[in-house]
Image (cartoon, rainbow, N blue to C red; front, side, top):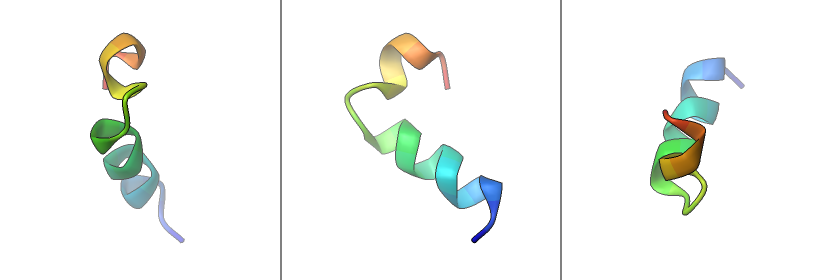
Length: 21
């Protein structure tokens, strides 16, 4: 499991907005 995948998951999640990803 790479961090890049994690960032991608955050980006497509509703939280991606306020996380600033």
